[in-house]
Length: 160
Image (cartoon, rainbow, N blue to C red; front, side, top):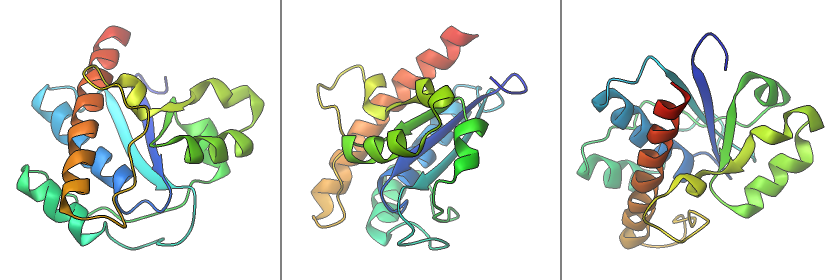
């Protein structure tokens, strides 16, 4: 851990749906739990499709319905510095985890994992990409992310 904080990077493909939603949910939950000073969060994509753009409007609307504002976030691509800078680099799915594993220097490989490994009430291992689906897909993504966020908060408390 750097500077007494746990640094967490959340990763999906384009950084406009799943990972910014996860960042927004985690920020809110950490604030509610009084733990926002213990965790530094960011999100990124494995691809550069949407660099500099805000989250998908559907993701923003779904998050807003749950009281979460992600409109200020901007997409960026994972870079080599991230592997050293973050304590946990959590991918939304196996495909993006594979890309991270291929790019990650071996000495930082233990930082990589799937975000849903922290879910307590779900059996899914991957947060599905809602980009080509409808509103229900974004709601399902939020359900999965909220569960994993609670599990990650437990991990933050455990690390004390």
